[in-house]
Picture 1: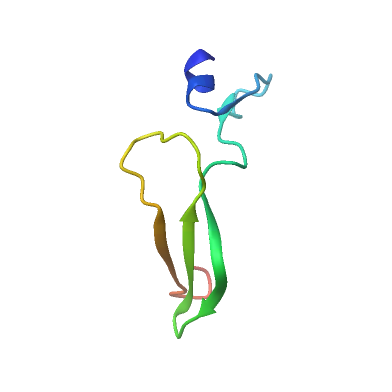
Picture 2: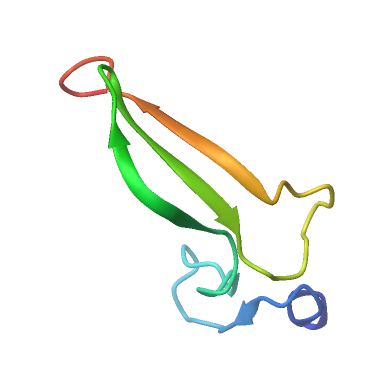
Length: 74
């Protein structure tokens, strides 16, 4: 529990063993900057990192997410 809290995560013990007790809240991760852009294969989005503690270090502040739709089910 203390390691979870030090990372800035949420701690919520549950009786279901398949649900993690330590998890990232809505303040972690990235947000979409601008509009999603359609491409011939899928879409692209520019992402900006939310200000939060780093879990692994060397986080990138800005990313380009590229999604490729390969088949109807993939």
